[in-house]
Length: 553
Image (cartoon, rainbow, N blue to C red; front, side):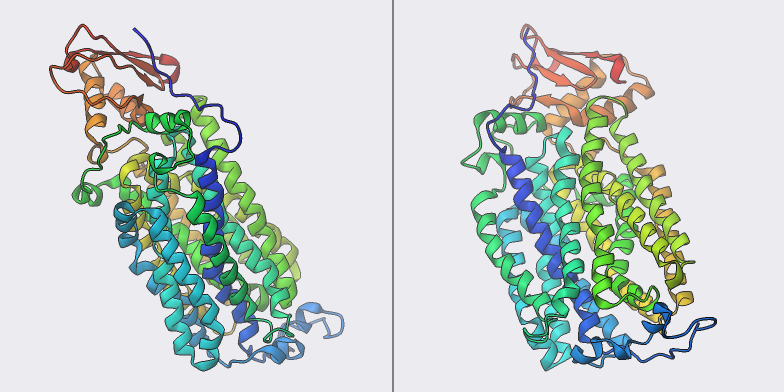
């Protein structure tokens, strides 16, 4: 009796799954760069209101107090380069317009990627977004409504991104490598944020070239079109379609996922999805997390200017430091999560809940403290923003990967649902925040941070109570059902045994043999926490036994 173990093959050079991750990293980079460039450019595009420079000036003078000196932007170069006099309401609509389109294509993105493939769907979407970005400066100078329309189109084109990527990783990521592959790939979005925020101030001041701020649209759009060449060459919809993959890596990926060569994905179990508390726990976290990401991301440059009173160049440099460190934190959390799971230190469910709480409670605590700080303690405010940026990516190894845990073959559709609802903060967030901060005072901004703390705390509590990490019954394909059924038939199980088996069954590794009742086959299945053994002297429906490894239970 032999045993088949699916260990990562030793390959010369970069594996194909990591090639997909690296190219995908830059795809996410441009996906976010084209999304947030408007929030950074807005500081330089729009003439700020002239405020009373004597406000909060007790015991300070204009000459020795940079906080008061920077309060009135009348002496800033912003007034010289700014071309538009848009009201706060108009600015809110410009910032929110992207998300109207973005929300509309979430569900269709996962479905299209499942049918047409991520390579085509994401490639066409990001190409449309890049071209529209190139025309944004012309639209803004023509009519603000044209700019809003282009931002809606960019949202429509990039709304398919995350659902399509989740569909891709549902096929490319071995179960015990999901955290590090997915978190690394999605770290590109944070890096795109870093680059735009950091270099945005310098590009705004490059007035010799079309008054500076249009470069925030020209450069990301142009470079994205060049990157598309690498996307077309190196990325394929599944390992089986990659002509450069080695047989060893192909067997490892498909074997660890339990994909046989004739596998055809069953129809999407929509009823099971919408009635699953595990799905809704993730969706709630998705909404709460994107409130912090979308709402604060689009308004943070204004907060840095109005409350902490950084100049436009300082704003870009200081704002980029937390985001830059967050990129490495996201990668580190992914590596740590998979290390803990592979070594059996915690179950997958415990890993997901702990990492989710680190991210959400970290945001809540830091947000409350930051809300009491102003320009005179802005060093502490920046420090706490760094802490927030380091802790927040913990949720990437929490709810983000959890979509693939509970339904690997339907992760794109699930993420489409989650991101549809999760996009609502991007629409209502800037509108609510601009309405809450009509004068841009610290007291007004304090309310927005309290709101963020309350939302993330609620999300953490919901995830603790309702989250699951086992592949859900409605998400099982035929071979999954055979193995799960055998877990319970091969030994007497208690309720506790059942919970353990369900939690760990997504780590089952088995070959591409479809077993029909009455057949006699030899098939070995390794299980993290035990081994399934096949005996060819018995028919297939009765030839499997399970030996649990108590060290992993």
